[in-house]
Image 1 (spheres, rainbow, N blue to C red):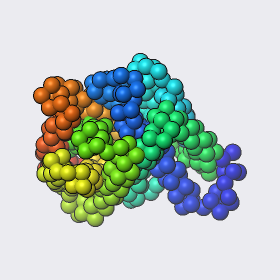
Image 2 (tube, one colour):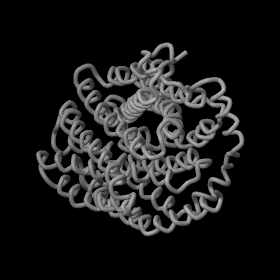
Image 3 (cartoon, one colour):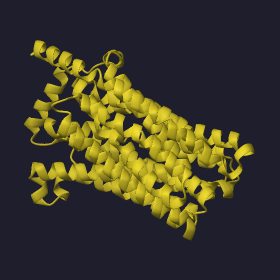
Image 4 (cartoon, rainbow, N blue to C red):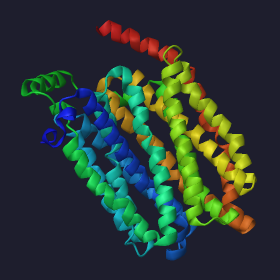
Length: 444
């Protein structure tokens, strides 16, 4: 059905279909982060309207969302790995759910209603990344998968930028409730476009080709959860990269919520100013950083694999002095420093998920990605906003309105932790790649 709705030039051209799939998945990922991050810029008016504490803001933006998101990610990844599943349908259905629940956030009249709506957003978004990575793996040639994953990852800073700008401008003009609805409704329409425009690769081509693919996939036994766990837990690179990414996310999601509030409370910016100046700056920085991570991986990692992990290690170490300068200085220093920090923090994405493609067997990759996302989002998204919110509340009696600034000093210094973890990963990657090549050669 979907092929008949496409122009013949796209339907009959494999390269055009690959580009269409990647662009639509990029837009889906951007919508993913619009709906996930818009609550950050809206946190202050929500707090004032509903009478919430900083701890409740941290719980609503982080832990409650992350618990559902991470828990459902693994079974959905198993579903996506099933040769008979339709991953396009999984992504499109997930998009419709999280977009609808985002719109419902605008109808909340108390903390518990808003919390339940945010949990609903987490339920929907759990189906996005594992199934999308699996689609990319079957759509894009092996030599281009790293760049394709980085391209998909650009949806993170693009969506975060859009969420900050849309949320900031609309909250100041029509209120935070309408901002949620404007962010949510377009995603339902995009879900329909994705469903009709993208063909599941397992079902593409002729009937004979589809039957041959199905027979080949059934001949290769899928790894069980325990087998996948054994494989990933014996990889020091996977463990250190996962922990490193988790701390990048811990700091990124924590700062994502509290940087905007810091600019409002400590520098007196209005919501639209935070959305436009900080949102655009951090979004552009994230785009450049994500691209840079993919470029350095392809440019230097092929000949010297240690560079896969050294790039995010160096980048995160550089964020420490840059953030401290930004938090100490005036607003005209803070925003450029936060922009540079966002660029450096984005470097981790392509090398981290690219190492899964390099080190983990094909039968375990989708679940390995979901396990990585489970740890990353539980630690990062679940604990980052919450713990920095708690720290702000603890410091409030001493620091007053500057409590957020002091909690962010802690976040800045903690950039050393992921830098060390990625450095440890770099020390093991060459050996593990050599061991994998030997195993593959023995099997062939």
